[in-house]
Length: 173
Image 1 (tube, rainbow, N blue to C red):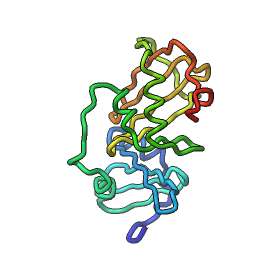
Image 2 (cartoon, rainbow, N blue to C red):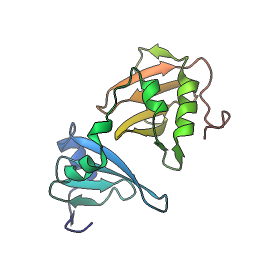
Image 3 (cartoon, one colour):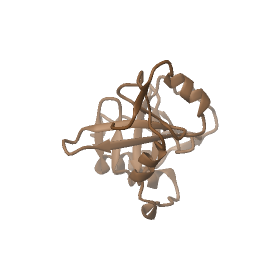
Image 4 (cartoon, rainbow, N blue to C red):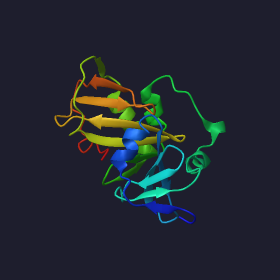
């Protein structure tokens, strides 16, 4: 990144603490279908998910993320299921999936019931859905019957599925 500087001594943990409510996630796909995920902290710091130990400073870094979002296309969805189904990208730490999988996931979760109980999602598998420049995270429990939807603002809603959510057996993985 031209005109950016690597900052020594500043960590991602420092940035999370300082910019708790001002963090934006983005994903880029280049012509070789390589995916690059990065976060913009505040207005000047960029951290790539693949190299979280490197913090880069770029004045007006938020403009980079804003350039990826076409405000004309911003949509409002009646529920998280419609937002997930409209996702063009689904990314985990190992895989990249496209819209067909998003639609399948949406159908799989359609009969889930709201769960008022809070869960610890630290060990759950996370799937990141990118819809019209918006990130929605789906975390699935280890046993596969509970899941959590985290919206772009970071609020979480928990649900319980009537059947085990298995991405492999449903040909979704």
